[in-house]
Image 1: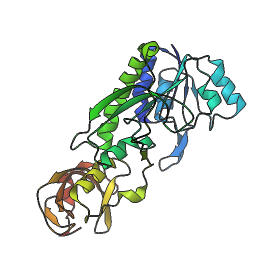
Image 2: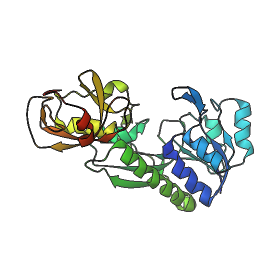
Image 3: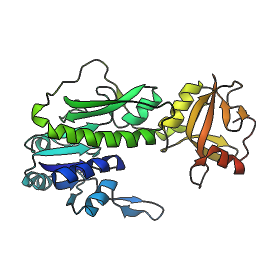
Image 4: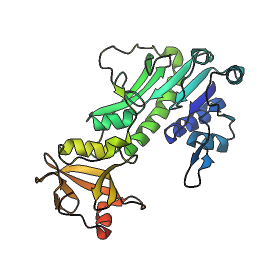
Length: 297
């Protein structure tokens, strides 16, 4: 098929690679380069960079509402557009341009966790499973009919980063399967029941309140890893906690029971990976070689 690919972050890259190996990618759309790093130099998105390396033509309009940008899109006469975390709203006129429509990979079991942060919200909510949906796009936010879905369990110690990578690979395989059998797939409207929204992660959610139950804190740590990273104050330093597990033990909330095992409002959490300010993530045992925890956080 003649495919237009639209995506921006690292999550989208494996899908682009899979499509490029099997179909004719006639154009790639990604968000414009943004200032990044200490020097605030313009940095291409992961999709932009990978598409360029593959020799594909990349388009980076701020929006897709200008007639001239829409004309470029239409001129490619794509059979289908595949959209994966593009980050811009597509006008209906653009959704209607590809002959077979626009297909989206969404990292949840729709209608649960429509919106911006489905991976993080699934972990933080304590969901036992999540998955990938291949959806026909329409004007609403993740409201289109589902063509194909793949389910997967969420591991007891899995972080948002771990799950991100698994779902990215699962999504790439699912999209290839969907395109291979597109004529035989029956779109299924999403049910009205069970709708929930995955709001964008706010950095204000990252501070750990040790009076909360251990399962809530454990899910907060894993769901916000690696970004923005759940954190706790250790003296004058803000330390990010990146991996954890629920553990036995009890004490006053924030009490350091042993090593990096911290008492919570109920139960305890053992931190297994952390990151000090200005340093790289390290196993908790390595962090503790240079950091002395107070009796209570």
